[in-house]
Length: 187
Image (tube, rainbow, N blue to C red; front, side, top):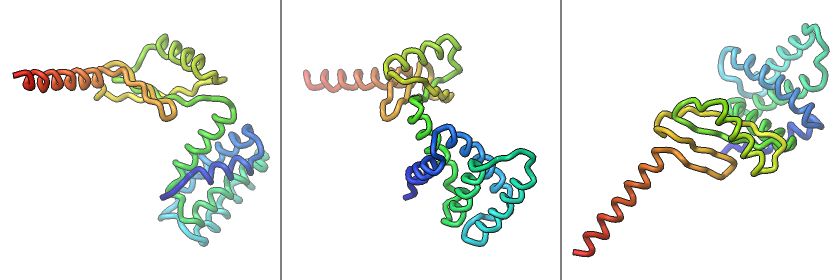
């Protein structure tokens, strides 16, 4: 099973600081998108070397001085290709983001709702979560899931706060079933 954690740790360590890691991460995203545009599946030493030449040529043609962050991102893409795990790039990027946010004291929270919540509710949620966690900042991601009918589900790390209408209906159905079982036992 693929584990993106070692990749993220090595990336951030090589970058040296969270701000350098953030800059390198932006280049990593660009290089991964560019690599996806190349024909065929990327894997192995030959493809990694070919990709490295493309990246180096693109950086040479660039008007601005990109420096170490771009070089780091280019090397990471090459290593992913060489190790035959380029197809896992989204997981690696996501893990790098999580580690950078953790270093900066930013909590990541996912809010699931049936429809877009109002801005006032989002602001209140951010403030409340920030207060509860003591975090410096909150990265709030909204996912629209019509199947929860109404209400909200909040995912924060391994914690799930489920205030959805769907969950309430499931709980009521379970309570009714328990009453039915109990009433049959009484007879």
